Length: 208
Ligand code: FES
Ligand code: FES
Image 1 (cartoon, rainbow, N blue to C red):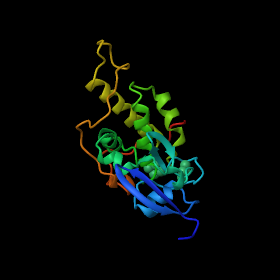
Image 2: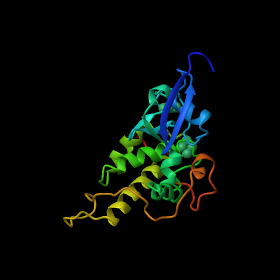
Image 3: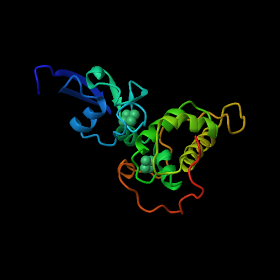
Image 4: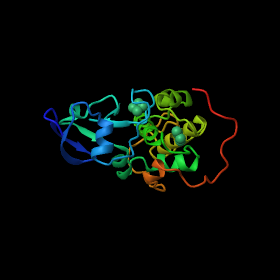
């Protein structure tokens, strides 16, 4: 602690937090080091890889580009809180089912980014999915399987809640919230998963 440290108060995953932090400490370091929320990862530390993705007052941001002191009075949601809410249970299950992760390092950020896209309420094209996750780098899983998983969930959500006008799939409004599928814990995405149920996809990575 130094005389320059500052007091902050914020909500993290619904919990009121008060802390004294160094002015130079980033949000992701604060989450990991001070709050032990290690599901948010650190990769490039300059806003490129997406490993540190969290929500700040509802917006998806890079935790390495925001200082903890800037978050005074805000609401932060990490992969732990979002996962515990059940809002992405279907995405997590689809990532496991489609073999869309290997080491899991990118997966928390990838899931938060995917949920942001699906919250727009339509079934996005594969091109739109690729564009949306282009700021989240995965170094060991083919992007093909990640796009497959996100696309599958978009269609599932649209099927569960067809548009009131009775139009076909592809333009349906996808609701947020628990999908009632097999739940996958955060730990499944922060450590190496069990062997996948299906062989890994062949053919290498999909270009972005
Ligand atoms: S660690 Fe923040 S974007 Fe890479
Ligand atoms: S970096 Fe994406 S699963 Fe390993």
